[in-house]
Length: 230
Image (cartoon, rainbow, N blue to C red; front, top):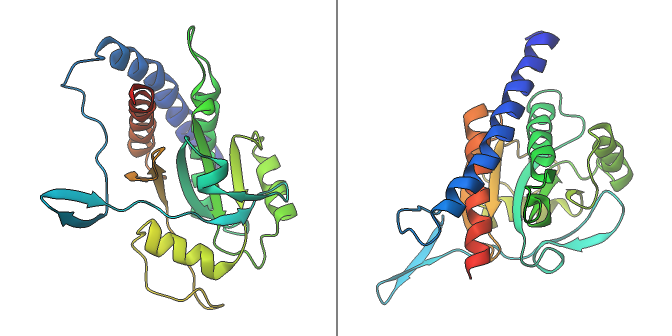
């Protein structure tokens, strides 16, 4: 695919998301109190107890962001919705496209409606490296800067490889080959994973697919309304 086609595809993604977010807010606000709103489902059923479905709540992980600051997803991002993907800075294939598509969301979420606050106050983007041996926090900062991101609203995280891989497989349930996080283990997923404010998984989306990225944006906008109604 040549550079012009790539730019056109990114433009279409941006156009779709930029158009979708205001519409989603409009229809949600218009329909508040209407039982026909269908919130995104929870994923990863742990068990059924006394007739109730108990879904998996994602446990915390502590890593280091691109500014060199130790952070905890559940403590430092308490009350926020999180969109997570997995990348590495030397990836020549899907990672640049994933990051470019997330940048579209990053830009769209920053736009404030006439009333209220921008989605970037309620949503955090998190990109976790699957190659932490190479991807030190200065390297991740350089990568983040190349996309012009707001370091407060979008974290690029590194840390212990075993902990990262355990989190991806056992907490987020990424469908990848089993492994133990050793030097020969590699996760290369193009999924975006959405966690709600209570750390339930509320969606998996193909980060390379225009329609899926737009659906992610729409679902996240719904979840922000769910958060406000609590």
